Length: 62
Image (tube, rainbow, N blue to C red; front, top):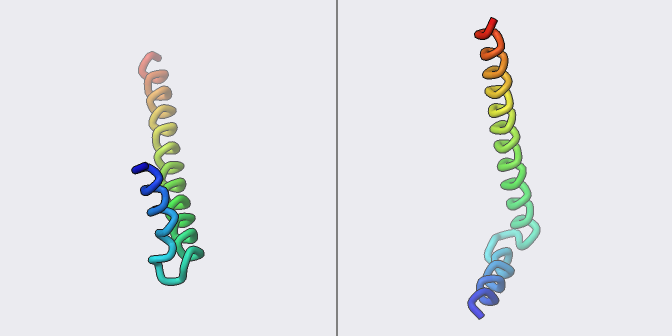
């Protein structure tokens, strides 16, 4: 019962935003785009650190 009320509240969110549902979904799209971009940057950072660590370990052994 409580989950149904929660879902109903989420479904009504666009009606409270000026511009209606379209601007709400554009805002969600922008938020997902920014989060995806930050996630990609973080993933590149992790991979580069891993590669640099492997290269450093290889040169330390020689």
